[in-house]
Image (cartoon, rainbow, N blue to C red; front, side):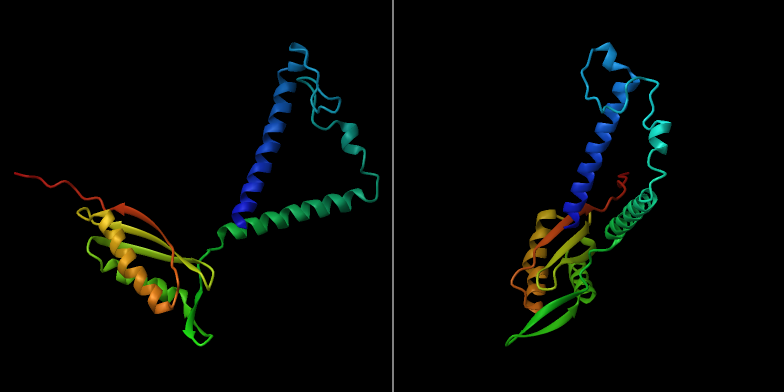
Length: 198
């Protein structure tokens, strides 16, 4: 859901900025008169010396009793929505626990951090893997693995991925009683200095 909200917000912000930029550009360069453009009567800028809000427009609604409560409520809503969006971005999407099927309809709860540490330790014990960072995301009943592996310079990426899939993730699936455990893996190779031959 957060990805959809981000895309909608970015799309709306882009449309508003492009429209406002086009309006300012047309007014500032006086393109209406230069190119004989027929623009709507409500176009905000008529020429290079126009302003977005005239003095009359700024003072028009001040005497109305509903004006200030509406302005304050709208600004408050914008601030609250902005804070919600910011906190949603900063919140870690880390899975806290995994629901383990212990058979007979009963379930047990496994701490997500414990499974992450076990996966990291087993992955780091693999040949050619220098460091492993494993994070769990998804839902309690359908966890997903986000793995970031740092390989030694001599390691084979395809071999490391094969062992990760066939051994480490298979062990985690069987021990947690999961039907599937999808994984996204990012690989990087540990840099090393060139050796001098003398």
